[in-house]
Length: 178
Image 1: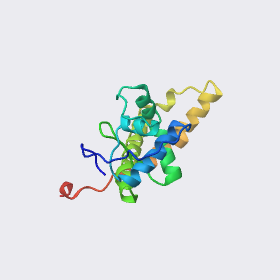
Image 2: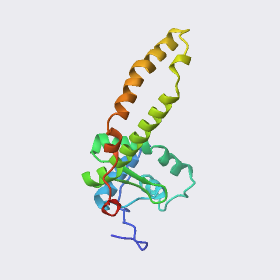
Image 3: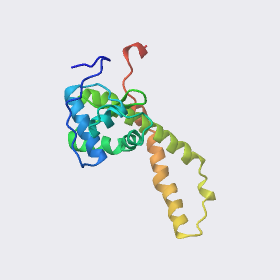
Image 4: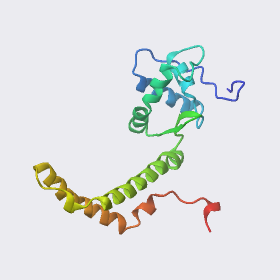
């Protein structure tokens, strides 16, 4: 099953001609998930397998860049169509999540951290906005001023008066406790 370098052998994958890049990559990652669960696949190898090439292209090829450009769409397709997520690594490549634990430990944790960061930025930015300095000279500015005064302020109050952001953080590892 493994090649000389210890990577999983995904050479039996049959590419499907004339499909979109997103569909090709999604289909290949589902194949890799089944045949080599948890193994990262380099972007050049993804191109090799979905294109049926005898060997991978260079990392700086336009095809590899095209695969990298559809990663968000592939993540969405994996979630919506296959009930799994996508894990990326800048050096190792990409892979579909193996199971619910893998999905929670990778993609859900990352989403929680990002949401917490977005909340902190929202609170910080709101604190910098002086509502008195927003003019009411146009209907758009009046609407903006009303939104800042009512909705945005209510959201900030809700964020800072709860431990919502703390609940978004993943559980600490055993060595981190204490």
